[in-house]
Length: 300
Image 1 (cartoon, helix red, strand yellow):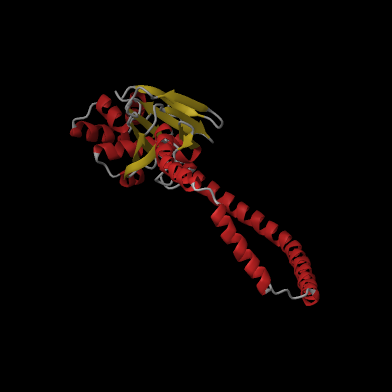
Image 2 (cartoon, rainbow, N blue to C red):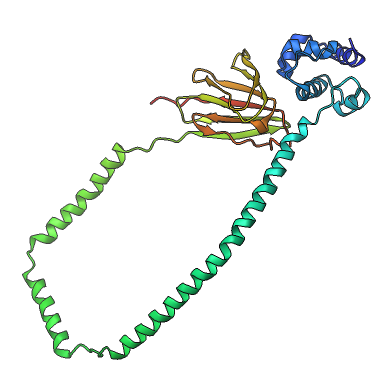
């Protein structure tokens, strides 16, 4: 057992926690907790997760993780993996900016030519309209034409059947009743909602409503360690996913889904086909806990 392991174990026992208690608090598998205390990191998913698990262990037993990393830096594997998501994000940003700038510069000459052609067409059109307007004779309606129109309107009013007004009134009276029947027949169905209701550090709680299904899919865009728990805090899955791997779960009969995401930047979460939006930036907080409370739609 290393000096770091002894320090962590003493802090755990001072809190009165067993390894099982610590597993429930941190959502880290017991065998990994034992490996941290014994200084045996071979069973860990990788160096990045060794540091992440030690940090989580420290927070659970009340030790300052920054101080622990500094004091026992020789015992803890060093890695730059935690900088990878930010670095990749910056590289992609620079690349997209440079590519978009090149496309803009290529487009400018074409845009200028198009504007010149459009301007020339507008000038020709205005000139032609002016010529046509000069040649067109001015026409003023005569007083006789106006009088004929008035006489025809008066004649049409006198010949209008008397029952037209009654039929129209009956139609107008029936219209509201018909609209009410159509409204009763076509009641809009509530749309699924998935909203973040609380965020504390690396833990974000969501509420899923207005749906009878709770289908969860986890997709890996790179290496990511994932733990999945149900309402009873039973472990449904724990392991490392590689790029392109997916895991699907049906929580339709559950009330809570608890997810431990080891590398949020490399993990997409979708609920019933709708992508979940991280409220805490995955490039700033790599390890995140996601809790989804499910409120099943009430049957009528």
